[in-house]
Amino acid sequence: MSTRIVRTVVLFLVKLLARVRIEGLENLPESGSYIATANHVGRLEVLLTFYVVRRDDIILLIAEKYRKHRIWRWLARQVNGIFIDRYNADFGAIREVLRRLKQGGVLAISPEGTRSPTGNLIQARQGAAYLALKSGLPIVAVAAIGNEDAVVKARYKRLRRADVLIRVGKLYQPPALDHAQREQQLVQLTDEIMCHIAGLLPEERRGYYRDYPRVAELIQQDIV
Image (cartoon, rainbow, N blue to C red; front, top):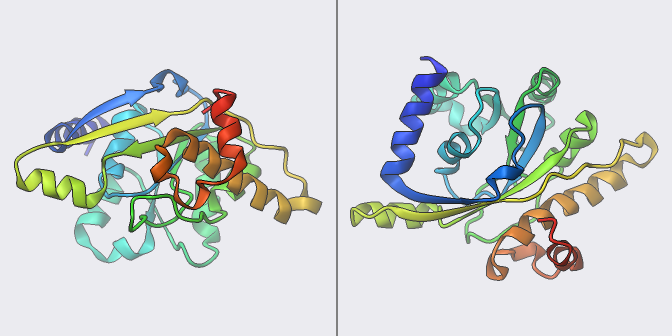
């Protein structure tokens, strides 16, 4: 299936299921590689990624558990997705992501690694920070509000679309990788990534990162 057909189907499904409003769309580069990091609250995010990022070189990571489902295997093929083991070091998937980034692709990744059961931010894993440090690429935070699975399902049952707000932050550059300080850098950059996302969310949705002073700093500096 061609990329054009896939995008047409995606746009149709998104408009069928949700009314989407986007803030900060101008912060997304139209060309060149970067890493888009977002909160993770619902399956609709797969479609929203292609709805917001209007490019044909999106790198989408899909949890290994979905490989056993025929529909997800089909979808992964259509969007050129990469299945990844979230609980073990999946070096094959990591190498493929870095290869595509080097070719100019855009990585869409949820640092939390799994959907939040409450809709609030949970503690993130270090995968997104690792890829950012290894690639040296800029990062942009994206926050999705109103697309929780339960909300979308409940609205759909009543033949109503979910009201989804997408907020896009300003691009920022991770530090250069220092192999001697790598572990410390991973911790610090993971927190920085999540604070950028938290700053785009309502206070009640910031969850684990709600009381991080860095969130308030970013909001005050108007860089989220």
